[in-house]
Image (cartoon, rainbow, N blue to C red; front, side):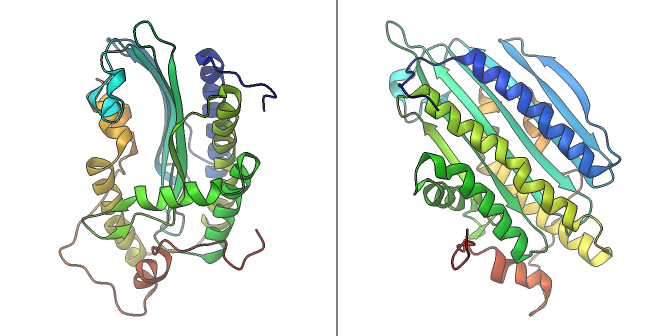
Length: 312
């Protein structure tokens, strides 16, 4: 972390970090999958910029997954980015980030999402305005206390160097953001979420984004390794596909990244990469009382404090 504030953004440094992060995550996920290979698709955006999509399908663990890097730019800020920044309307901008979603075949392995991103706009006759955002969250179909505690321990450790209360703040933000209002339920067991982060010290702000980005694979890989060999059958698979419907609903109705990508003329294939390959909806489904399926919503999807009374 910087000893003296670095106020001016350094997009090139952020881009190099993000490209390296994409490579490291894909390497670790391919290793834990054991069979699948991430295929690379490099693309250009006519309006400016482009990206690299890395996609895995029909692997040993992951039915579908994608780790996407994008660096896009434009002459006028999209509406989704100026709603609470009216002074940036009409400013040229650039945005870059790594975003991923992994959908496992085994219902006992949770789906996970992560994203770290950087945005900078340059209003006429003014200094550049930057901010960072990101986080990660976990969406189990069948929950395990030890997985949730591990997930949140890693998240807390990533935040602690930047403030004692930062984990609590970002966990609360995550719980509120990844919430399906029309269902009145959380999407998963939470994690971290932050946006619009700018303290005026670019070096420290960038270090926070790196800490969050680097910690994702340390949080997720051990859970995948622990659950990937568990036996499952048609009942578990049906429930997994049903719960995937919640994931689709959130991404198409509420997700900021999806909205920004579509409004800014982004690449549709990459924007919708997060959607699962198979999903089902069932009218008015209610799991059997006392079942593991019922326990998901009754116990795990409650916004609970997973580190309470735990030596974190």
